[in-house]
Length: 195
Image (cartoon, rainbow, N blue to C red):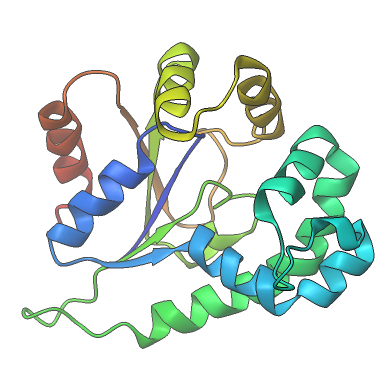
């Protein structure tokens, strides 16, 4: 089974991904794939956004780039056009290469906030969408990333298209709320991922 894992910023995807990894799921972190592709495409990215987004060692300053693209939808789309095609290709290769577990089952989780937006949902058998109220997500983001209310609102606006009701070709979509305790979250996840 290929399970898509999605949700907005600080909804709890990382918590669910860690839980699934601990339960023998092969985890594809699409953000991590994006970081790798971003560095591989650093020349094209710096040509599109200027040399000021490069650090002294030549790598892309993701924080500076993030500040640019989260504040401007046109710049975000330009960045996506550079990195998304290579990301989708790499994720598909990783999912296809995942080894089966001890029972002979392939259990792959594709962890991506932009699962639907990037078209990654098309490779999934089931989709798990993690939800949490905005205020809870803001406090999580402030605690984890030191994000300001303004930065949170910008990030939240840029993720308006991330919704649990998105259509999927052939995959069942399940929404799980993450605003109570972890045990309740994990019980809800188990109910979705059981064969």
